[in-house]
Image (cartoon, rainbow, N blue to C red; front, side):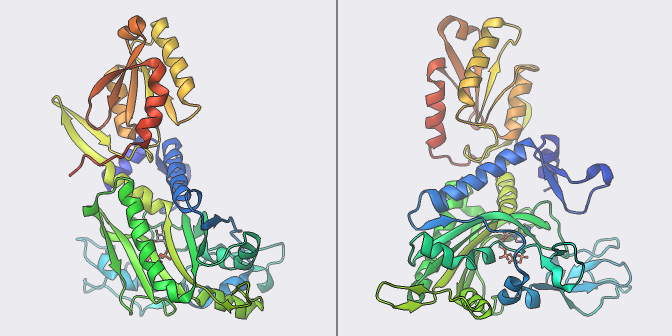
Length: 444
Ligand code: ATP
């Protein structure tokens, strides 16, 4: 993980936040390439979830909702983790994750393993961030930053099912920031307090819930393998009854083998009719499906939920490689071309050469209308290739002497390092086509 963090910083993907003020623990800002890569992940998710389907629509609900939403959903009473303090080293730990925690003392051991450790009994710590709405600072103005995007979907069930004229099975998808005051954030972006969730609530007739639950586990798993994650690095782990929320009749984690071990990348849950029933009871508005013949029922909900951050880290870990090529070492990010921040680089071999420079600039301007591409004319060509390898750019188009003779360019492939020549006029179509091709990780 340290190598990934250092590459992210060196190449401007992600920086520690508020750095000039000493930072703020486990908070990060995204630089240019990080923003581009996040945008690609978000749009690939929306494409699979909304654009390419007939049965899912999008929503963007508010971050600060009426606090009654969180009472009804059970978050005010129960969205908590068990917290343990150590009176000796003053550190805090999650009681259910002690096996992954480290005591503040050296040599590193788990909390409770030194004779001096003095741990408190676990107590419940609510993870919701509180805030005030309006100028009054009394209890009546208390509100919360949402800890998940899902509730903003449930409370809009009636609006969407009526206005979008949908009947189950159908889904509502949302992408947006969620906030959790995690007791032990860490492992880079894996557990942060502010993250961008992508959740989809799929409403189904109760009798079909199990079938749709299995369907969504399969769909989401394939989404990852389709984006180049190796099957050997992914697994589905079904929760046993003791791990599930009381309302869930099935929860599975799609886990990725992060450098910190197998961990939840995405969760898929069968939430039953719990959420719609709770909001119906608390708001007095019936959140149910009413058919043409007056038949009515409360749909069950299947929810795939993930954060961009967990995908971002998994993709970076999956891509990172160090290789020796022609006796030189290179660090390369084998990112799926659709995820890579920059799709192609345009490189004039001799930047001072007017013929090369003008052709490179014209090609760059043509390509950037359709894709995120980069023009780089500084430094030796080898250094420029290495730089693109480190940010995971799948292809580089080099304008050289031969271009001036026959109007062709060299295309260099990041993974195989093969080079071929293409007519400069065909590069845009070639790139469109290359981005549609199936891609497999060269890593074994
Ligand atoms: P955990 O047990 O790891 O705290 P959770 O089971 O509470 O996670 P969910 O409530 O199921 O997580 O959240 C759905 C998804 O949101 C997770 O699968 C994960 O991708 C993402 N997620 C949750 N918490 C965080 C966080 N603190 N930082 C980044 N992503 C998160």
